[in-house]
Every structure is written in structure tokens, then in C-alpha cells.
Image (cartoon, rainbow, N blue to C red; front, top):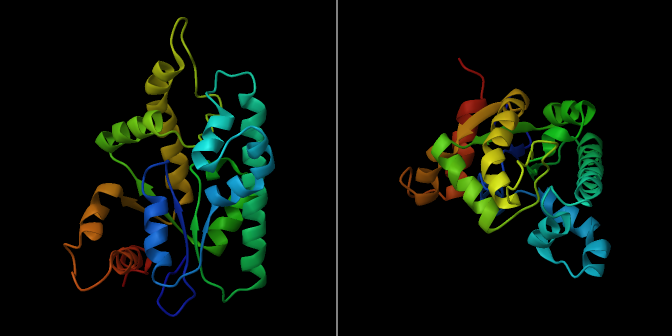
Length: 228
């Protein structure tokens, strides 16, 4: 996909929870671009069931889903994915009907599980940027998940050993989940951006007169524009 300054800005940020998708979506939204957070949309769709159980916010969604060892987890994982799929279908339909509309799409880490048909539409409609964490940063992602859980679809990757606590299983199995997803993210994305390389943009070491969002956008345009 060509990504030039004279085209409507349509970006989807993909990657693991904690990689910075929401942070950079907000930076781009501050420049005036319309943005959609899939997490927020899913939370809104699940609001009735969340409220009935006393859950609130995206952390409440994670608490409602629970650890993968719970008997209710498979059903709730499927319900979460169904809501996510419905949201993406609505977003893509809107973009197809309005080809001049711009959008920054903050996806969930589970976007890769939404089916080939939706993923083909995603690649056709927007430029997909994968925010990739290094091995060291992946350890930080694991700690963040354990300390401040966000919804995660394990899709069978949670494999407890006898006598192992759920937290210990997460710590052991999460790297395998990241590795499995990495291949799917790389195959889906139009470009891959190392998370470590984005820190300097948020700190302002490049072009201090520009905002973090402007610096991020310039970095993405450099990678997505056709090579001469």
C-alpha cells in the first residue's frame, strides 16, 4: 500500500498489549485525526454484562474474562472476539462507503484472530503498522500484564503444569504466545517499527519543534512511502 501525504491518512496500529498502540493513537488524535480504540468499543458493547457483575473499565473486562484456567474463560474469550469482529466489520464498512475518510485504528492484540476475510479488508483499507517489542521489552510486557492485566486471548497457549499457579503459568507461557503472534503480526503489517526506536520520538530528541505525533507520523511515512 502506498502511503503518501496526498492520500487520506488511514493507519492501524497492531502489536501486543503494552507495546504503545494506544499511546501513539492518542498522539495522532491530538493532531486532529479521527481515532477509534477497539478496546473502548468492546468495553462499551460488553457494558451490560460487565455492569451486572460489578466490572468497570478495560481492567474490568480482563477481570470478567479471568485467568484462562477458569471454566467460564472459553465462553467469554469467544464473546470478546465476537464483539471485536463485529466492531471491525462496522469500521471497515464505514471506510468502504467513505473512501476519503481518515482514521487511526487502535487495534487489540487479538486482531489477528478475527478471520482472514476481515484481515484482507484491513490490509486493503488501511496501512498497518506493527509495533514490535524486543526480547528485553517482552519481559516488561509480561510484568505489565501480571501487574495491570488487560484482556488477552490465549487461544490455547495457556498450558498449566500440575501444581502451578495461574500467575506462574502466565509467566512461563506468555513468551510463547508473543512468539506465535509475532509471525502473524509481521505477515499482516505493511511495516514493522521497533518499539525501542520510538522512545526518542516521545522524548523529543528528533526535531524538537515537532510534536511526538508529528515525529511518529513522519517515521511511518518514511517506511511506507515507495522507494525511489
